[in-house]
Length: 458
Ligand SMILES: Cc1cc2nc3c(=O)[nH]c(=O)nc-3n(C[C@H](O)[C@H](O)[C@H](O)COP(=O)(O)OP(=O)(O)OC[C@H]3O[C@@H](n4cnc5c(N)ncnc54)[C@H](O)[C@@H]3O)c2cc1C
Image (cartoon, rainbow, N blue to C red; front, top):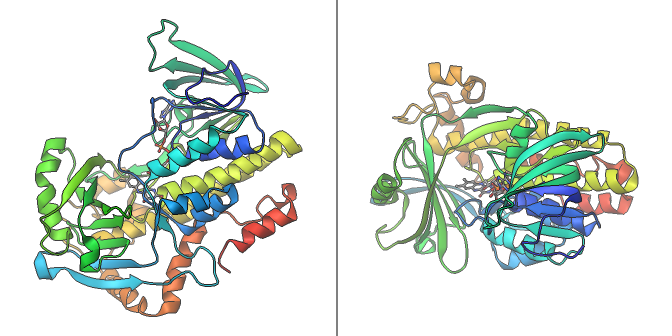
């Protein structure tokens, strides 16, 4: 089948991937490279360019190496060899707190990199377009799924979102369906898969892309700004001087109100005079901690934001999505081409869910607590309160560690980070998001598993 950007949807395909975000594009590319007939369906007519992920953790980079795209991604990236923590404040109140400066040594991928997620998606699609077994269809939305049309197929109904044709809906029979259609996943809903967890009830996040000379004031490529109100994440996006500044607001603000309040936030966050900046994009988001009750139901698989959502402080969401997609594509390939039992997909689902709950969820909440001084900061919106709302939303177990004694623990952590060995340990923690290299060794060549092992720190 000829690969064709914005081709017609076929009536039959081996794997249908819903959503041409980074996770869908990555999944489709891995499957197509294995010669599997894959159809990637995207509701929009182009990829999403809103300000979202920029930080890719080292474990995601190892997946990119396996996919053969790492060198190209690197060309469009800046590395995060140095991570800094600062205290927010007005003028000279801003203070450096801690640094992780561990550089690449003999251990591969101890550091991550920053690259706009739209750049990575574009690159993935440019490779996918060249794959003969891939079809990319923009302007079509998955609107319905019949999960078990027969024992071997699902039937997916698509609606044309960008067509003047009177023929607005069409159906595709697929042996497998991958829902990579984001947090509001139609596939997840159609498959009646639950989405457990909670939405942070008292705050929204604002992501801004801005030109400002942070480096002049010793800001490094990745920075956490600590403050109960004016906390922020500041990261360099490109060598052209574009940076990401993300911070929190109270809920329910209009876009105009967010724009109006932006200079007040920047006053506490931006080093130096904090005036001569040029804002390029502003977008607000609701933060969540949610996970699908399963990532596999029959012939339907979920990956990326469709499978889980976490608050973006710490940059773990897309990394976790890439770490779903790599193993899932390999497991599905083993099932389709090598006669592996379908139970390997159940195993993948169990392990990815367990990893999300024990690693991504916990680490992302902890990054948020540290940035917001949860438990001991001013907290005027009551974000970390152990109150009725938290109880009602099932948050208690997850925020219970935000207690006043954490101030001392956080201070001790900043102190400990003066020691290089502790910096390395902090860097390595994020590798817990990845599955063990040999989790499906029975269905892979030893050399492949060994190569993967070598991409990881000891
Ligand atoms: C402000 C912010 C900063 C972030 N920073 C980081 C970071 O630094 N590092 C990190 O790892 N993560 C980060 N994240 C998280 C990251 O952006 C997401 O995890 C990532 O976008 C998930 O990719 P995805 O492909 O699963 O979903 P998405 O990017 O949401 O892509 C889903 C795609 O599916 C399409 N779609 C939706 N419904 C349908 C349908 N019915 N039919 C067909 N197509 C459909 C959508 O149009 C979209 O193109 C951040 C998030 C935010 C909000």
